Length: 320
Image (cartoon, rainbow, N blue to C red; front, side):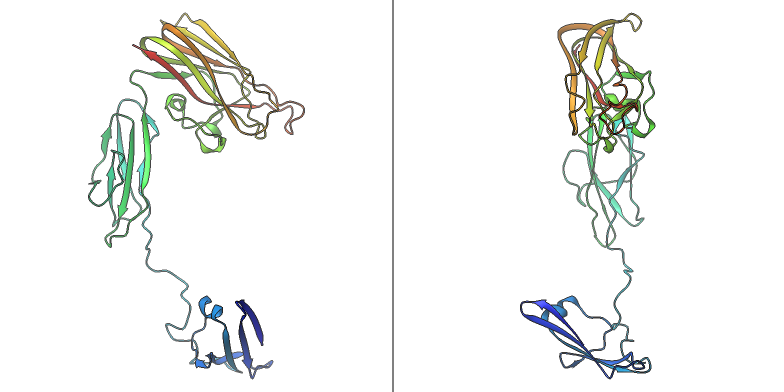
């Protein structure tokens, strides 16, 4: 006999009659005095309180708990969840134009999408063939199967890099923290406080030299670069960042050196923009030189090992 206190001053009793070392097979059962042929019990019945009595025997019963509905369901044959569609081979940033391919896992689903910020429905544009975008666009899509079951809405924003702007990096980033490659530094997507999100580009034991080509001479009024510090995982702000400009890509002039003013021993994740602003500066090329933070200090658990710096992104403001 077992007694379970189920709350609200209620008890659920389980009693096995005629049980012995030989009689350990259930022959029949009664729940609150009524015949009970199921080989399981619902949680809601337990909470009601009551009494479940088993009659035991020496051999397995050929009639108790063998019906199709007497056994608990152990598998779900119908997949009622509709997987969320996704952008196939999608890039977070692009130059010029890009073809968008939407995809879903279930073959009997239709995809409906919008590019104007509204929520997609069955009345939205149905995805049939890849489509082209030529500006920063937020794509929302939903998959609907033949029974009308809907997926969650997929939302993805693809940022267009300003026309004519290019970037070259003359340093090697850590492959674990690529942020998607070279364009990550000018894609318009800023990293958050978590270095593990894939938005930050990480460098270890090396300076960074990056040159941005604006396509033609512009009137530059602002240059900057954003960085992350999170001391525990070895990420420090760079000691200084240099900004250079050129009109021809050969002869560069240093216009600013911005030094870090945040202590190395300030724990926790934080961001800082190293910024240079000016009223007027005519140039086509911008060179950014980021100095490595060196080795971790003595008080750090990883003392003596080269620290990382994480950058995202290089930004600038100009007029034609």
